[in-house]
Amino acid sequence: MITNPTRQRSLRGHKPTRPTPRLANTAEHQAVLAWRLTPRDKWIARMLWEHRVLTAHQITALAFPSVRSGRMRLRELYQAGVLDRFQPFVTVGTAPMHYVLAPAGAAVLAAEDGLDIKELGYRHDRAFGVAHSLRLAHTVGVNEWFTALVARARHPRPDEQIELTAWWSETRCARHFGDLIKPDGYGRWHQHDSQIEWFLEYDFGTEPLGKLAGKLTGYAHLAQATGITTPLLVWLPTSRREAAARRVLAQAWRDLDDRHTVPIATAAAELLNPEAAHPSPADEVWLPLTAGSSTSRCALATLPEVWPHLPAPVTPGDNGATGADSPHPLARPPSPMPPTTLATRPPPTTSRPERR
Image (tube, rainbow, N blue to C red):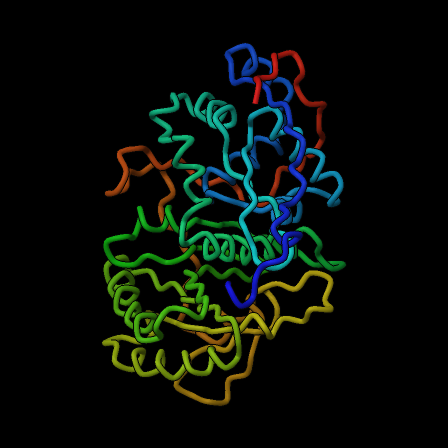
């Protein structure tokens, strides 16, 4: 710093944004929300409660026809106290706005479920705690992975029937299977007459590959305990990382007592076509981990053809359950696809803005 002093103009911060008035979370305001919130608004709130945090880009891709309409509605929901937002620091460029569930939104969800806020398990400080979590980038990355599938399903090709019918968060998976496995997510994809379900391991390139391979034992024990064979999809950042991971995974997979109970396929993010209209993990990027070496990459929907022993998907029980790490009931997950009724209403304006 002495030999290379910082110029004064480099110390200037960005011009502070004008404070946005927000409506106080009162009983009167919650009554107004009863007729101001659309099914899509409530669905967004449930998705944030399920998956903790979603960026503005992700919410727009999930539920809005355009970036402009999404940005406007998210601003209205923020002003109404249904959603909260923060913007992480990045060294280059500007990070997108990240959204979490706000107290008014949590009150609406709790009332719909016949619970109070404590029974729902919501705490504002915990909801905002993800902003400082060391796993923020990983959580956003997993949500981006599933968001790409939803965006792909929302824009099908002619005569194409596709849908993401299940999307479980890491938290929900941990509460259901945490004694054996802790995957980054669970999903189910429906395309024409084909269905496939899977557990997801989302690799950021920072975890030791030996630790990743060590998880296969837990998946084998889960298959043995439940009698359900569920494929494991491993998503990696680069082809080089994928090749290294496949060598380690193959060794651990061969050491399993019954390797057929843990079908594995890997893919790399850099294999996606950036020029495609909606690139997603549904594309032909998956390479199954099989005993033979002649298997080529295939699409997500065609993976069951590689594993002829794979039975029809069986969704794990999604009734309310209580996890070992939380006394609060685990409600049914929201549908990954947005509601068909997407009409919006103007933001509530009857409550008094609180001073900020």
